[in-house]
Amino acid sequence: MAQIDYAINVSDDRELVRAATDVFIGKVIEQTGTSTEPYLQTHFSVDVIETIKGNATGNVIVNQFGGYEHVLIWKYLTLADGDELLRPGENYLFVTKGDDESGYTFAPTYGNLLIEDQEDYQQKKLRFQKAFAEEISFEFP
Image 1: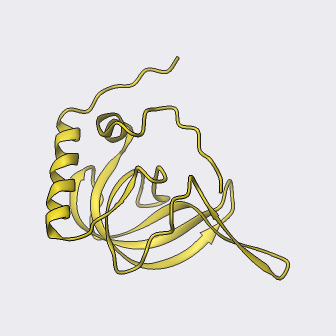
Image 2: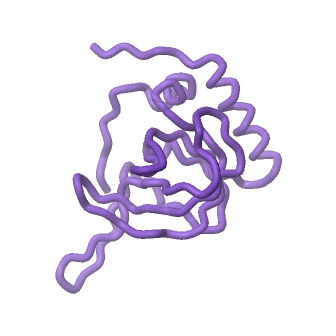
Image 3: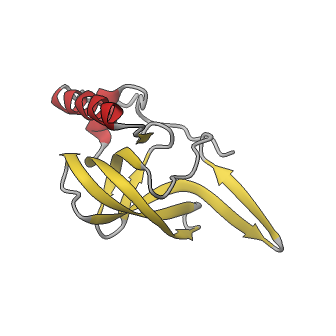
């Protein structure tokens, strides 16, 4: 497991949303690949269902830190902060930074929230709409 050090308080929705370019709810369609530069990432095709912040629409690529690495004949799963890989067919609320060209990347654990059902969808949507309305700036030491 790889650990991430954050420059912001990612557990504060308002600060997390402030650092994001795009916040949206989307359905994971499929894994589209992996890359290792500058670090291991797994890429997923996601259909955007609803945008809360930013311009993400349609089908986008979402980049997740971690994934499977092949070393000789072995295959290893590396997870960032224990954040499980996205599951195709599931809906998530994504808090991301990026664009259509490079894809949208999120903070592990805090930037990809699984949506359990319609009630959970509404709760998470309202939670992050409120965070967007009340987003706060962060200061670097």
